[in-house]
Length: 112
Image 1 (cartoon, rainbow, N blue to C red):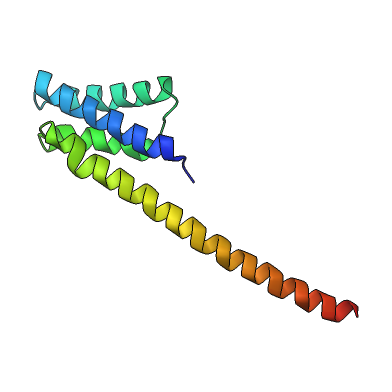
Image 2 (cartoon, one colour):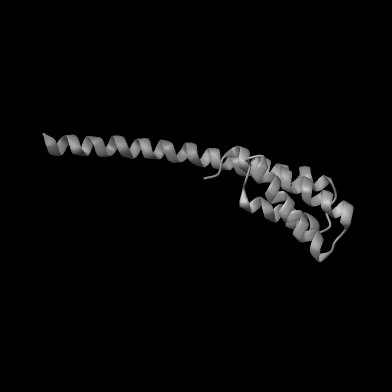
């Protein structure tokens, strides 16, 4: 599972770079390559690598997005993704603790 910093930071940096490259160079075949490459390089340099975020830079250029794209849907989506993963992790830990206690009781009965 990815770290929260990687998910949010990777998508944020990729969207900023993707929109910036589109605003500077427009939509060409090489601007898409440049945007994705720059996004991946910046994520590597800032230790926020999240490979799916490369698609954020790609879509920012392909669909000719404006700066609003950075906040809605990218940041909102990244925050929702992290929140849902935390909820799922919390629920699965509760279930795991319950199963461990149940199995421990079963082993105690066998040993007696």
